[in-house]
Image (cartoon, rainbow, N blue to C red; front, side, top):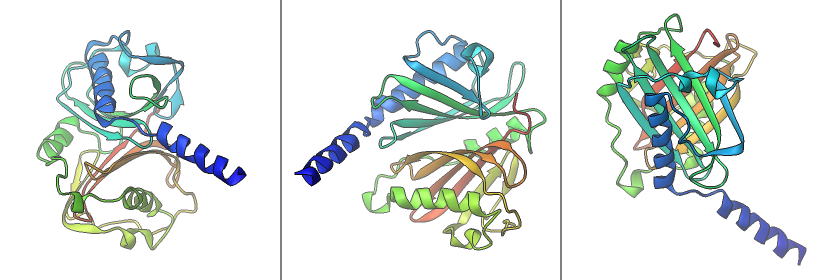
Length: 259
């Protein structure tokens, strides 16, 4: 009987942790609208809502969302298991240019936002040049994977994301990643193709920590927000796309300044 109760509880937990993809993307769009207008009043925030920018908690009024930005590129992915989304946006005009990665988390539904978690890079950050980054990423193909046989598993995407972050501490991690022959890597504004060359193979004793994941099997993508502890304590976002079992795109957003 106790085993049956435990099984039912497990199933209920799994059910509650599954969200609607369209709803998650719609909620991500409300975040985009708030960023364009600098007005957060229409966001559906939970009573326990938190805002985090460059790995530090702060008030919404003290973050990027308090200022309107013209956005040159916006793209969102959805994680229906974690009830979360990831949005990348780039702004090259107006005041400060930005390249931003934001994870949004929900309280077991597709409307109430419990956390907006942002990594924001601007002038002076690692390899930063928003116009160059925009030029590279605009050329990418992010068409959803329609062939179900080609959709990578959640486990594979998580493994690839972790292996990428482990390259600085594990000499075998780089070679465990299934690099595509035409893979493109954009680190800040630094472009490398194919991805599998010029990679770190250990050397640091400090693993990259504070890992937070958004995994979208339909897009074949994983985004990991983290703290880059291997070479310091830099706020970081790593987004990787896998097509036909091979890594196609890698994006990194690294903030040297945590403000």
